[in-house]
View 1 (cartoon, rainbow, N blue to C red):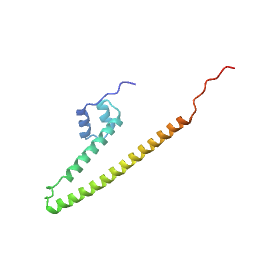
View 2: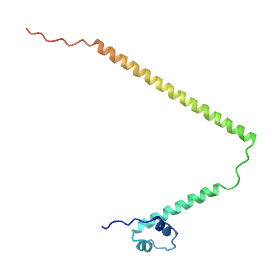
View 3: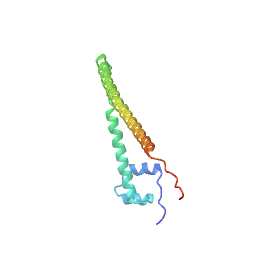
View 4: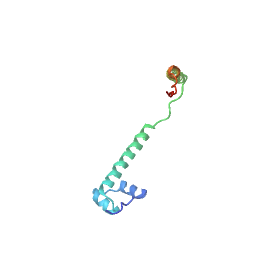
Length: 125
């Protein structure tokens, strides 16, 4: 098989904007496989859909900040802060517990080493 031809960005834009119906016709023009053309067309439609979806969500002016909105936002942030502090405390307790277990295991291993008698040299008879 021959080397695959890599399409330029400008070629991909032309493909995305092409009005031809046959994938094979477009593919023959750019000397690529028709499945590559299909992938480019699908990707371009996804990109455009995402762009227009985001654009439609940005309509209008931002909401006017009032004292009530500010209080609600502060309460929400305070609740999030409490939750994060709680999670942090739980994680710190877990760390402390694991450190304590590690210390106990080290002490146990040290005691085991102390209990083991030293190997005596064999004496000649």
